[in-house]
Length: 104
Image (cartoon, rainbow, N blue to C red; front, side, top):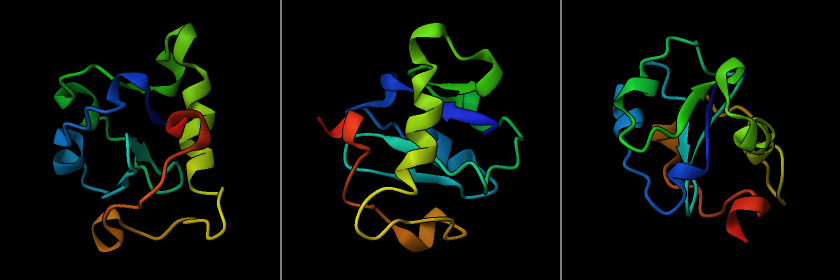
């Protein structure tokens, strides 16, 4: 997973990153945004536009945020109807749930 959205996005969701992402790989949960790891092209355009400083390249994740690499990936595989890799957030819209660690 190239880029990861972390806890600073929870309950803020500025969405500047969604506007900047050319791959349309940033999906909206109820409380935070998530990067689909298979769709991210690792361009890095999302990272500098985030006013909460919640996006990091996976190799640069702060120690206290490393588990968000797993949280972002699992968001697309958990639930009764997993999203998988739908090929673009715009056509999906707001997902309506979060990863259990975020929704709690």
